[in-house]
Length: 116
Image 1: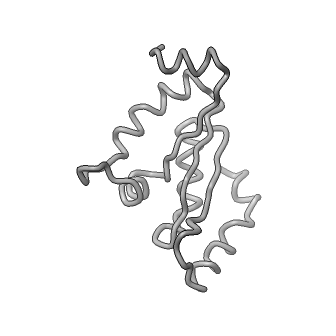
Image 2 (image 1 turned 60 degrees about the horizontal axis):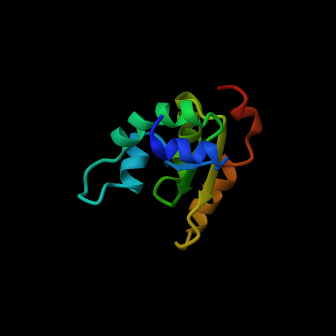
């Protein structure tokens, strides 16, 4: 375990991983500084993070361009091994009425979440 992980564990610090979902969502929302895709880097490190911190929270930003991918992002998080997930709409952008309705259609679906 690397020094940073050891420090976090020794001090009982919990972490949250900002990852927005499958590669097409992650790469769109969070490109690297040089413009390259970030999904490969994130996916490569998820197993290391979850091994050291099994209760790490998967934290995704939902915006208008990917709000229809919210459920796909949830499934992605579960398949990667996360047991905690947090989805936050981007409140810095003005949401269209159409996309607010999309979110309303997606969010209240607990039965869907149990059938993965």
